[in-house]
Length: 522
Image (cartoon, rainbow, N blue to C red):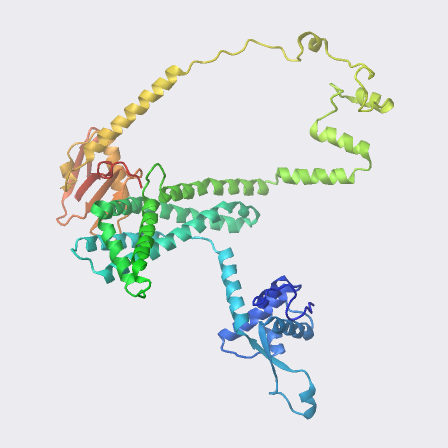
């Protein structure tokens, strides 16, 4: 048991309550302090040593109560606890001369435990990809669009909308950063049980699929709303209005620069939001990087699955093989045995011998040849006549001709250009230039029809019960489709060379986002 001086030598003034973290028996100290925190939640002010002893977990509870008393005294010396005489159980004059105390948390000790709890929580925290935050960001951006339509936006409403947007975006960015960091540690799952990993794997894949779908459908919508707010400097008016409201409570000495400082803070937050969803100046958006990282988690999980399968099949990995070999070297009786083990395991021999067989080993054992012997003084080597004649055991054949792949590259370039032209033509064919119906699309060629089905599928994937309209963006962010539910029960027919596509008619609008955004990519 550590009986270090109460002030813990070397501990800076004011940080004594943290001294128990570097003392022996730190686990016991932490458990004792945790018992006081639990008691505080139950509105218990003082604890006796017997109460603390009973509140300790079996894994850290010492065998004797005196060990807990010594830990309590040490914590009192460091400032974590306060000791008061326990007069509640005095029944005789002799009891006044016995050392009996009741203990309670000090303000410093409670603050130290709160700091340690926050530290433990941050280390054990795994980030979560918040699809709900994406919906909230869309709602807040639409609210800002409504405010830009006013000649003089209300400062209070503007500040509340921007503050809510910054809060939800900050939570999304922090959780995404923590999630990407936790995915880097997926390799740790190699050491967990098979059942635990399989349960985690299924949940994570479903989770990633749902978030990626929401990120694709909502990311393009958020990017479009950001561009609409930035047109004509609308967002700048809102940022200045929010900054002016923040600076209204500034003191007269700070009023001169408080407004400009507040505006710069809001402008920085908006720039961070825009860079998260828009690709600009040759840099990919954080949303696209996050989507790629989430998709890359699937191969990592498959690698862990392969590792588990190898473990289940009884195959050993390379690290286990090297550990076994190291044990064999350590157990070898002498250097000769270690040399034989080396040659057997790695097939590496001294450069002096081109061929090592039983006769060579017997000759070396009978007449050892020191490693420092000069070539001229060493015994002659027996080599193959073919090696003497050609310099190689292998027969050299005619070298392969270098293939000219220029024609293949040209065909690939022509195919890529043709496919790009066909895709551009299909995209231009589907653009409605306004609101129309599914029946109004007319006859579609096969490529346009496949693109139309992809857009329609993305829109219907976001449809929820009770919704009357929805919108979705294509996977590459180049097109947007907006659907409105039918009210008359009419049936739509879209004709193609391969047949007729039938279904409930919808009001539809298909927009080419590349023309509107000038090539900006979410």
